[in-house]
Length: 154
Image (cartoon, rainbow, N blue to C red):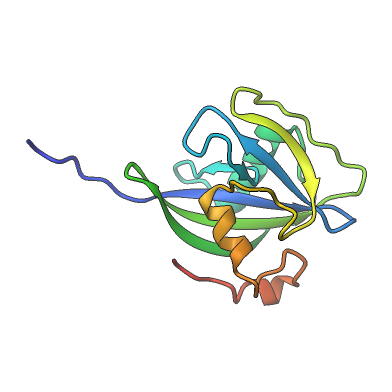
């Protein structure tokens, strides 16, 4: 039996921070990680930049059109299960206090909620989110220059 060649895939997770310092979190549904809490995001398309992917995924999943800067925040590597090995690039953006997410993909997400970063994010968590939450040196409110130094593979 011949084993098919496989490669890690690239995902983009988006840390949306509102004026209160809360982050948008949803509960996954209908795919790997179903029932787990996660950030908006998805797979990087061919020839797409991380920023373009972040903007596209947030619009597709939440109905929020990101108009401000979307910047690099963090990178992690996770083997989610035997068929899912992902390199996740986290991008960060600030949104207004009155921004509300719409669950535009109810077959993929139970709903979106603004939460404090850290222990208030419920379990179970999607592995890439769990990795970044466990890194106590990372904060979604850090400056862009400081965030750029948080580049790790696990």
